[in-house]
Image (cartoon, rainbow, N blue to C red; front, top):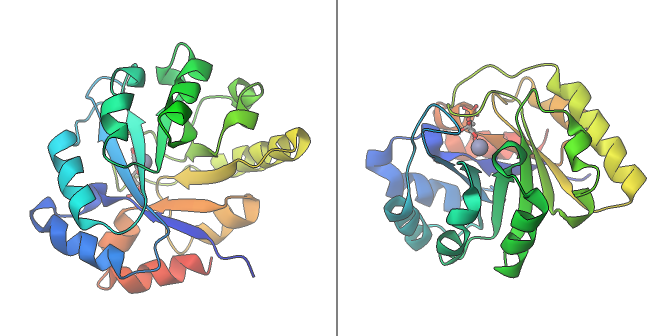
Length: 217
Ligand code: DX5
Ligand code: ZN
């Protein structure tokens, strides 16, 4: 049976022990590392920038996905791509020229993902989904870890799955926010290929084991 792709989000970890956390993730079954970059404008929070990203790149053996919660992400794409990033995910709401930004990400040699806030309709994907490696559906309002999963996103996952089928394209569906081993099964049954999980992994006594369980969703 196809296993669920699991991307741990390091946002809710203790940054004083970032090296230890990355070692745990390196030894785990995680498929890639989900790194949340926030600018205090697009979302009401700041996370981290280039120095931390540099440290992450030195210690991780997993591919890195950057989830850019920043306005006009095109300003930083080139700089981010220098950190050997596998995928850059930008928010549709943050890009005036989304198609151009997606092309720029691909020209830099990275996979391209587009994230949608919980309230954003999926119409904006119709003419771009064929260009995407991934659609990231936010199941919380972005900006903070540890929030509650929004149940209405289950229907949105089904709608995006149907759109992918209609368009005959290969984009994966990633769902981000409030996912745990209790609600994760429903997320996968609705059509998610990948789950981003922060608190539920890092609040547990055994993050490696938590990741292994999530793979079986
Ligand atoms: C929220 C971030 C998420 C978050 C997920 O804005 O995009 O990636 O860290 O963490 P949990 O699983 O705690 O909701
Ligand atoms: Zn995220």
